[in-house]
Image 1: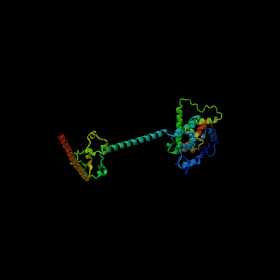
Image 2: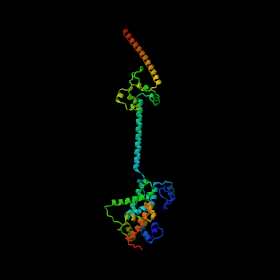
Image 3: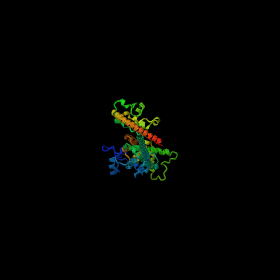
Image 4: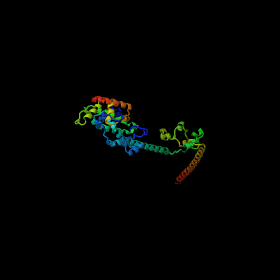
Length: 188
Length: 192
């Protein structure tokens, strides 16, 4: 949901979560959120975003573990986050750092990747598409995964990652074009 | 390709919808947030820091109390509580001549002239940081009367005069007694 004029910007997070119950909403409006409730809201709102960023960079099997590490790291430093509106961009940065650390710490081990799967019959097409997306440059693959896998709209991607809407639009358009090329789909 | 659908999911685009349905199995599965470890909630480091700071504060306060007690004991222990040196009294001093201790005191014991150095030193410095010379040769107590006003000086002189007269009379009495006892002893010897 885009930010409208009625949205109070001094709140910890915008009240556009459908899953947010009434109690959370009232306490949020009063600015009395305890840190665990705040963390829960953070996880619900930005879980797909962090998951998408990690999926664009890591093997699928590792995504869930690193996702938990990112959010636990975020929880430890949650009080240091002054601008709650920038929580999305902050989490994206944390997720990118964790992904980089993952490859740094496992440099000596052999990367199997997503190409070797025991049972690929059910996910064959999906894995091919995902591999094609992951072979693209960073900006395209991250935006495409957030749009096609996580189901975020262009506005939501721009709002949560802190990117400009125009950049997201360009990345989506060019990314789709490259995806078609890699999958051998002709533009009709 | 429907650009509007790609941007805001409005309308429809068969190709993008196919991609979405294919890739939906990799989507984030919403569940309960990860359980937070207890060590994240209790900050051991800050607790230790706060305990240490409390201990340091307590030690400082105790040291201050001990120093204060020592200072009070030393200032009252020499038996020269100088009432005349209170700020209210010293503010009433009008001329500089009255501040000086007179070298010639006709009634009391001979008094040394107070040096400029000792006049400038604050009282607590005198009390706490006594020099070895001062410890060996303590200043006469009369030197404490250096800041008296004119009336106080008069009263002080009268008192010293009275004490001196009393002392001299006592001395006469003592001499008389001694003389009488000597005479008694001599007469006893003569009788023997």
